[in-house]
Length: 335
Image 1 (cartoon, rainbow, N blue to C red):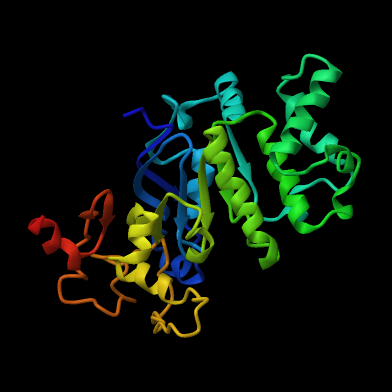
Image 2 (cartoon, one colour):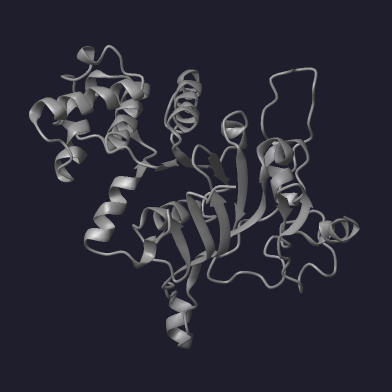
C-alpha cells in the first residue's frame, strides 16, 4: 500500500468569538468558534474525496487549512510528508506549486482585464517555471488542453466576459493545472454553473484524477453533485466528520441520521420511485456553543437519552466506512 498523498490528523481550527451586547453588559467571556473540531482523513493520488455538509459546517475552512491559507489551532495537515501548517517562506512557496484551488465563482475569480493566456500564464510567471517565452506558451497550451479548451487558439486571446460560465470555470481549472499540482481543492466548483454543464466540469475533474493521478478534495453541500464522481465521501456537521466511507456504501446505506437527511432530499430521476424527505427541526447550533454530547442531537429525529451526554466517536460500520452515532455502536461490537 502506497503512502497517502494527503494525511489530516486531528485537525482543529478555532476563531475568536464575537461578543454580543449581552456578553458586554454581563462581562461574559466569549468562547471561541470551533469551525473545524478534530477531523482526520487520508487521500491517495488519483482519488476524489467529497466533503459534504450544510453551510457553516466547516468544509471551506477545512479547504483553506489544506491549502495553507489558514494555520491550524491544533493537529496536522501532511502533504507528501511535509507539514503544511509549519511551512513558511520558500517552503510555503513550494507548497503553492503542489496544491491549487478551484474557487466557487468563475465570474469573480477571473480578472476581467486579462486575456485567457495571461490568466493561465500568471502562476507560471510568479513561480518562474517557464524557461523561455516559447516554453511559457507551450505550458499554457498544455494546461488549456487538459482543461478541455480546444482548439487553444480559439480561447487564448479572449476575455472572461466573452465566454460562458462553463468555459470560465475551465480557464480557472487550467490556471490551477499550469503548475502541475499533486492536489486540487475544488470549493463548490459547479454551484454557480447551469445544470446542463455541471456534469462536464465534474467529468473533467474526475478525469484529471484518473489520468494524471491528481488527488482532489471536492467541497460541496449537494450529495447529488458527487454521487457519480467521488471515490469517498466525508459528511461534516458542525466542524466534525460524522460519516466517512466509500461513495457507494454511504449513498446506498447511510448510517448517520444527518447523512440520511441529506440524502433524503436528493431528487430521484425516476418518477416511479418516491422517497420521504427528512426535514430537520431547528437551525444548526452556534459553533461557539456546541451542544454537549452528540452535537447533532438537538435536531436528530432519532435522539434518545444517551445522546445529550455522550459524544460518539467514529464507529466502524462496514469496510472503510465509519459513522459517529450511538445507534451504530452496537453494530460495531457485533463485527
